[in-house]
Image 1: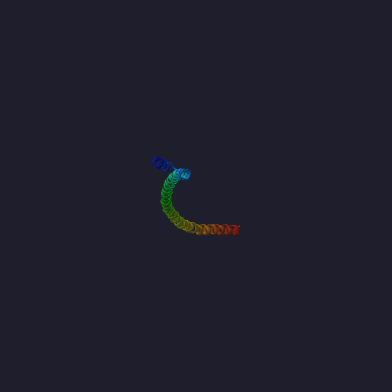
Image 2: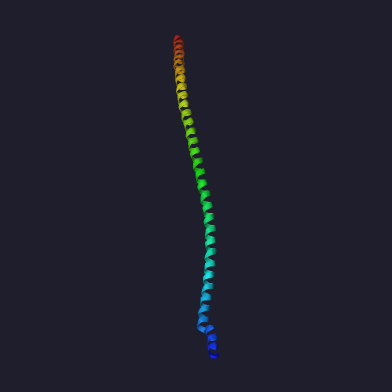
Length: 128
């Protein structure tokens, strides 16, 4: 029976092959753990990068909306200014026409008086 007991104790000692496969499994497990840890760190980095990009996108969207609103205000303001300039131009044109009419009105009598004074001079010079 002693030999059976020694055999059972021998059976409980792992063989070299079993130990090697256990070490191999342990090595693979450690490699997998390292890989998982690396992937977790990479995931964390990507999540942080995503969060930063999301904030930049929100800021850019807000800025674009603000600029569009400002541009629309400027267009409306410029349109109003252009309308005022056009009205002023029309008023100026009417005033210029009125002044030309006034000038023409005063030119006709002046021309007549100049020609009348010339006629008087001619008559006077003919009498001498």
